[in-house]
Amino acid sequence: MDLADAHSDLLMELVYFRAEDKPFASRWLPKLEAGGVQLQVCALFSDDPDLPELALRKALLGVAEFDRAVAENPSVIAVRSAADLDAALAPGRRGLMLSIEGMEPLGYDPGLIDVFCSLGVRMASLTWNRRNPFADGVAEAPAGGLSQIGRSLVDRMAGLPIAFDLAHANEGTFYEVLERTLDRPVLVSHALCRALVDIPRNLTDDQGRAIAERDGVVGLMALPFVVHESESTIARLIDHVDHLAQTVGVRHICLGGDFARQLERSGAFGAAAVAAATEIEGLAGPEDYPRLVEALSDRGYSDDDVGAIGSENLLRVLRRTLRD
Image (cartoon, rainbow, N blue to C red; front, side, top):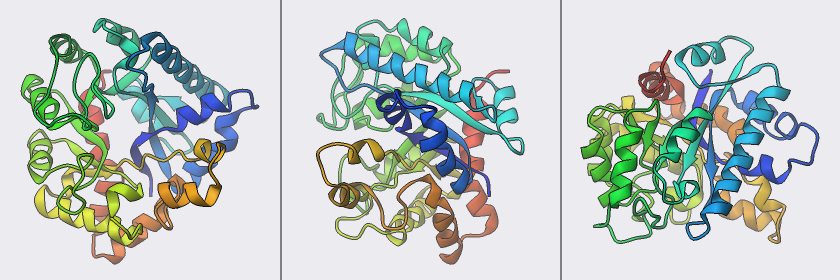
């Protein structure tokens, strides 16, 4: 089964390992192939709200590694248009799409989103966890929202082929963006259900319904702290699928694994400790997605349901985003 995943931090790893020969081909392409991931959205992440020049540099290094991955691997297509998406879904091909996770690289200039759009960004979230010049993230009080320049940025983005990603947005930002963007494509690329794990990083049922009302999707984030307080298993992840299916419907669920752990293992922490904190048992990366597919079937989801969750729902939102 061909799959599509709405969020990965693999570009951070490619930047870290950029001195290697063909790091995407050695570190990530085999994982995507093994997991059947036909389309992978790759996030540019720079958590440097007080150092916009550094954030911009990190983001541009990520763009460079994205372009390098495409250039060094003839089967891989950079997805910037509807035609690119069709080409990426052809047999023997694979697509990568750029997203941006938090607007720190823009500094205080909403106009720079045009530059990132020209570089290929087709999905964007305003925040990571913290407040930045444009909006409040989930680490802030729920009542916060967009700043004045944040509203200018949202209005500017609404005219671009970029989907609004509300992952990491606090509730004020979340609802203000929905209200301000009318019928533009929206999604939450990686999160789970607050009804099952009550942390700000997960969505309330009302937030899930608000995304569904806009025909958006919620990406299944496969990290332990959002899945369960103590049991990090595929079965507990599927509990969130069950809850979403009951509250918003299967049509509004997609994959958004948030995988990229090799970089963390290369640091000061031991591999076992990092794995325990960052991996679901049996679902360490995209290469393990077949286990999730099998588990969904075993839970009673039909082939049509699994196909919708695996790729069709996300592709529907992206097709509304992309231009010819």
